[in-house]
Length: 116
Length: 107
Image (cartoon, rainbow over all chains, first blue to last red; front, side, top):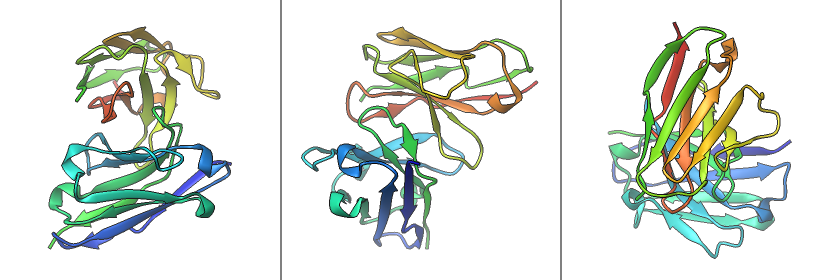
């Protein structure tokens, strides 16, 4: 069974950092791109960042460029999202998803709350 | 960035109704369009990919059509488990973008 499990969310003060983790299982992790998609409370879906299978291609939504860094280690079946200089606008449920353009499997999400 | 719009934003329907949701892209995205269903407290679930292809295991009452800038998701006979929010998403270009969602609830 394909699974993506996120961790690392929590309550953080504005300006601080947080690192989200995503561990995949039930599939060949190194064959797939991994993305992060977030959903603010009661709002829609926003793609945040994506990384290709070999880390050669990385993209970010403009609102997080220069603050967030995506990475992966295929030997550990894991991907990460380093989030720096967090603001209240980053408060959301962060989903780890599999796929390049089509997101066929999603984790349950990890909640990030930015508040003083 | 490619902007995605959906219509309607919400609709009320009854079990057995035929429901159609539309999605428009701000520029030509060919058939690089997916549809997702999300229920409260759950992650989104892929229904249709490449505009018209049903993901394995998704009931055949769901169908998608369209290309270019105009797309539709149709539920031929609404079932109780179909009350949810539906999102379209383009992947022709980065950043990947989603529509605002269409909430389908019980009339």
